Amino acid sequence: MHGLSVRALIVAGLLALFAATLALTYVSERNYETAARDSEERFFRKVAAIAAHPVLQDLQSDVVAFGSHFLARTEFVQGFGHATNTGYAESLELALQDPFVSGHVNAATVSLEALRVYDADWNLLATGRERGVMNVDDFALPARPNAVVQKARVRTGNDRLRALGGGWAFERGAFYSVILPIGGLTVRGYLEVVVNPALNLTRLEDLIRHPVTVRDLVTDKVLHTGAPPDAEHDLTITHTLESVDGRALYAL
Image (tube, rainbow, N blue to C red):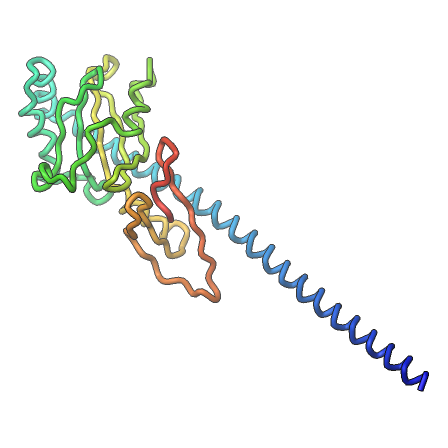
């Protein structure tokens, strides 16, 4: 009887040891899987952040190319000169509206929202938008300076001669503006090109070879949806793009 009790204790001890070993193995495997998944997630977050940078760089380059070409147009030069000399901006407004009416060569990569012209002291002279939405409140842009304009206004010296771009938020959504100086070395004013960057952000799919969903975090609207993920096998990563003043604009 005593021998049976000893054997029973030994068997029970071995079973407990085996169970503990299995539990430790399970925990180790789970920890390894979690660590591997965390490492993979960090890697793809970096990939998304790195890939988003050249997309926005390309957008800014295309906007600068459009803006530089636009500033050289005879209608703009004459309209701007007339507005600054007389205070009447009708011809300048017509020049600013023309790309929305007639189109422009960068239309495939630049989704124009508005063109704004300021004098050298940042007084707004004229705004150009598509005629169909010029006077519709739901499509109006803010009268107050956006974050990119505010950043440009405090620049001094040669910094004023450089193009400045960045994202900003408004109740109607997220936008991207590029500020270009007017007048060469003697700054006579500024052109603000306002664009919707959502179309450009979808290019991330081509760069990272993975489906990308673009969500406007200002309006909480999904602007583009990639292929639906496989919940069992796919890893979903979220990368946030911010405005120049640190506000969340887009979730990718």
